[in-house]
Structure formats: structure tokens, C-alpha cells
Image (cartoon, rainbow, N blue to C red; front, side):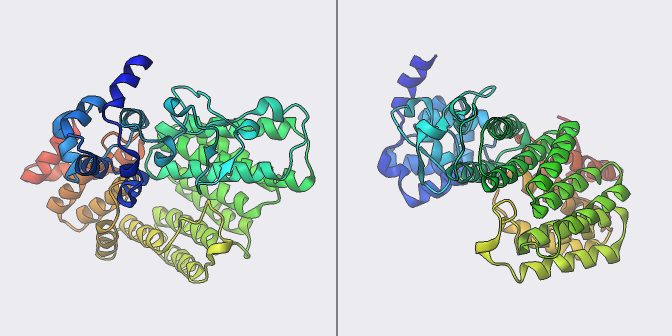
Length: 438
């Protein structure tokens, strides 16, 4: 099979000068394969039929992707395209591919290099990994771990986090979990200064949260709850109150689906645990999740106050002081959460304009998140008595979530579809209900 793959992909390899084009690099970083295919045809003369054959994609779908219709979001298909078109792994957030074995160095998210002999080794985890694993054989047998190792692990953890932008938890949970277990072995087996220990524990707490989030997204709630609990304990050991607060915020976000009042209590505790001196994006993240818990319970006043705190925090943010795990929180994110909260509170006149405006500029490459946010827009339209618009948005959710390894878009959409059943005689509604059953 390997020999066959090597022979097959060499004929459609994207030339280096095309891969290095700015537009190609940007498309690869977004996992925008429609643009990748279009640029490969334009600048390398690779026909869509050849791409379809090499990548095991129907020719008509390749053309549709190139026209901006649909997306590719599973790890297996992304890996296949990388190998078929000879796209280096780092350009897609993947590990170096088998055919890149001649490379002596592995790259981190910023293009810096780390000595592969000391820290990185390409290895298999389940069906495959996205990054090489730290070689614990040399580092975990009582060897003294220096200050460089936490820096390496922090960069690796940040790079892995980026995968959540485009992949669902079903595709990442095993990878994140293996990274967490690997770091636990390092911490348990090595010797280090107190400063290095504290940094390693903080990274371990981050990794537990990352793995917990992926497990939650994949529908494994028992695993995610366990990991959030472990992260909270480790963060306290590391004297990292911001991470301890975030572990509780994750737990509150999960708990709101089962016991909303308990989720409110946990969310309030998360803000208290993080303290008043949290970086701006940490404060915004914790308080927007606090707002969400209150919204689900129906506490409009508390919801509004928490959202106001989140917005005020972002007004004072300093990019150099924000941790990577919260740096993604921005004004757009808080606006989305505001729209979600108002939809949950049954206030569609407030929710619809916010969500419509933000989603209009939201990249389809972030298919899972766009699908989720669109669920609340559909819900708001249904509440407003606009079943046709609700059905239109619900159909978009079905398009976006196709092939995404996350249980959450469909879980959130199903109650909206149930509400639309009373309008089944309306043509647009009937069509989306029929689609949802296939």
C-alpha cells in the first residue's frame, strides 16, 4: 500500500513554488481545500479529475469545493490529501508525513526548530498522530529536566490547540489525551527545579483541559468531567489560579446541559478562583461562560451583567500578557455569546441582528463552530415566528456539520427541528426536516 501511494502521489505533487505562494499558504492554514484545489489547477496545471482520483474524492465534489461549496473537516481525509498532493505536514498542522522522513528537524507553530534527537519523535497514536511525541525514554528516567523543555511543550500545546479550529473532538481527543499522558510521565519520572516543576504542571493543566474539551465535543462526558477535575487539581498545584478557574468554567459549560443551577454555582466559583488580577481575555472567557449559565437558567439581569464584565475586560487587553489558551477570545466571540444568550432567553429581536452580522463574516473553515452558532440563530428565528428563516438556517447547519467529528451541532439543532415540526406543511421547513432524517 505504501509503495502504491508513493507512486500515485508523485504525479500530482504541488510544486514547491506554488506551495510557497502566500495565497496557497493561507488556504492550507485554513484547511480551505477548495482554494487549494483551485490554486493547484491555476498555478500547477493539476486538473480536478487528477485531484479527485488521487484524493479519492468525487470529481464533482472537487469542483464544488473549488467554487466555495462545502468543506473538508475530517482528519482522515485531510491526511489523505496531504499525502496525495505532497503537502508538507506542518503546512496543515500535521506531523511530518512519512515521505518527509529526510527532514532532520520538526517545526513548531512559529516555524522555529527544536532538536529532534532530544525532544521530538514521529510516532503512531491509534490511527496516527498530528505531531511527533516527545521521546520520554531518555527524559523520564530520573534525568534532570531543564528550562528548555517547558518552552518546547508550551509551543507544542499551542500548536495542537489550533487543530480545534478546524477539527472536531472525535478527530483530536486521542491525540490530546496522549499528549497529556506523555507530559504526566515526564513530570513523574524526571527531576527539576521548583520553577521548572511549576511550569510543567501548568502545561499539564492546559493539556488536561484541551483533552477534556475534545472529549466533550466528541460526546464522552464522563471522560471530559474527569479531565476537568484533574486539571483543576493540577492547576492548584502549579499555583496557576487562572487555569484553575478555567477548569471550573469548562466544567460549568458542560454541566449546564444537565443541571443548569449547579452550572451557575460552578461558573461563579470559576470567576472567584481566577481572581481579580486575571489577564483580560481570561476574565472575558470566564464571565461569558458565567453569562451562558445564567442565560440557560433564565436570569436575564445576571446574564447582562456578566456579558458587560466580559466586554469591559476586553477593552483593557494587552496582547503580550494574554495566555495562548485564552488569546482567541475577542469582541467577535463575546458578541456571539451575547447573541446566544439572548436567543436562550427568548429575546429574538436582540439575538438575530447580532448573530446574523457575526456569522456573515465567519469563515466556513471553522465549520463546527459556525454550525453551532447558527443553531442559536435558527432557534431565535423559530421563537420570532419565522419558520422559513429558521429552516433556511437549519439547512445551513446541516451543510456545515456534515463530516465534522463533533456531536454538538446536531445535539443543539435537534430541539430546533422539533419546534419546526408544527410547520411541516411549509415547503422550506418540510425539506429541511426530510434532510435531517437522512
